[in-house]
Length: 490
Ligand SMILES: O=P(O)(O)OC[C@H]1O[C@H](OP(=O)(O)OP(=O)(O)O)[C@H](O)[C@@H]1O
Ligand SMILES: NC(=O)CC[C@H](N)C(=O)O
Ligand SMILES: [Mg+2]
Image 1 (cartoon, rainbow, N blue to C red):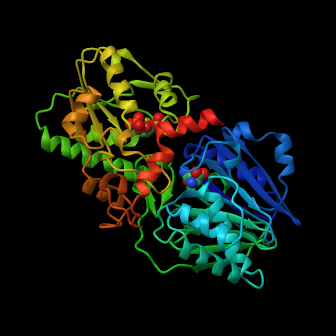
Image 2 (tube, protein in one colour):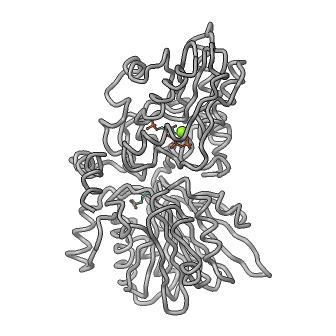
Image 3 (cartoon, protein in one colour):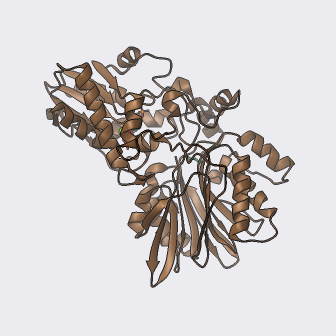
């Protein structure tokens, strides 16, 4: 899952883009980049690493301009190489830089089309470079450059592209362009601030980026909608696709987004608290005579749910694992070896919270099972009498194809396994998962009952449909094994 942000201001935007990226860092730790428009030039600086490692004073000085976009990357396509860091750039028409969060599922067909019919070169394996070239080609068909022509180009993109995408672009001579796929799978939110009487706008993956930059959250960009903010600060919006059924990704609420963000008018923090309540109620239903002494969250993401769950059970909540704040998120690391090592470096138990106790560990989700297997063992080693495990999300049994890098069913611990088998593999005394209907109701909350989400990694239902052979090809390209081979070749 990547983080994107675009800003049009009345003063230099690079410092704000940088600050915005630092609060979107949890969405992608592999690479980062900023592109700004100044006069007739696009300035781009990008590289592998965390935001703070990619930019230094020299790079920031280069990034002049009052219109710009930025990206932090967690790859779902292509390699982890520097040349696939974003934003991507094309010099024609006008000069366009684009940053993308999501994953296209018709990349191969589009890549062929772009080369054979649009006669454009794609230099990397990245789906985002394909998306940029589709947009560039569609814009090139227009006679002039205006918000209207950009909207028609976005219509073209939406007609041709399938998958999950939220994108920001800067087009020389126009300003900032942003768009979102017709199901709104990936998030994108619009913000506004007034500086010395002038309007300034920003779009970002998460509202937390708007908050820290002093932009007020106006609303989410609608599924299929295009947004243009001209370099002079005029906002234009238009629907650029046949309306599709909205299906925002539920995994944003489960794991990806920061709790202090609002997505689709739903507070991520509140959604997680409600997940804790419904999971607690399930435990009370299924194990009314439970013997749990203490509820312990697996930091960071599960905290909101664990606290509420403990209160529903009427059991005390304790922080039993201390997280090394200098180790990043482990789930979004590229290789299994690195992920497994990082859990140990990241979490350390406080034995007195475990010794002689029956503990219920709570995590937001169990994906590959890397975290839970180690954590359960750590709890036992720290002296727990019994170790139970609760997951605020249902079993992840199916690949995600819209921007979360879980492409290979065999790598998912729950794929093709019953809950009893998973329990045995994880080594806990019992395991409880949230039911999907409860998760969806918890996220929708009282304000949006019955709202539909993209829950494909739990249900196996893909709102875009999937071409035959797609999963097999994805697996060949993106399994941990394939990634290891590619890294060796770099
Ligand atoms: O079953 P797994 O494959 O281990 O994946 C699931 C775990 O990974 C994530 O934690 P992560 O360390 O990435 O981030 P966090 O600190 O935000 O919880 C998530 O919160 C789970 O703890
Ligand atoms: N997680 C994402 O949003 C990834 C964006 C894009 N598919 C890439 O791999 O760079
Ligand atoms: Mg975690």
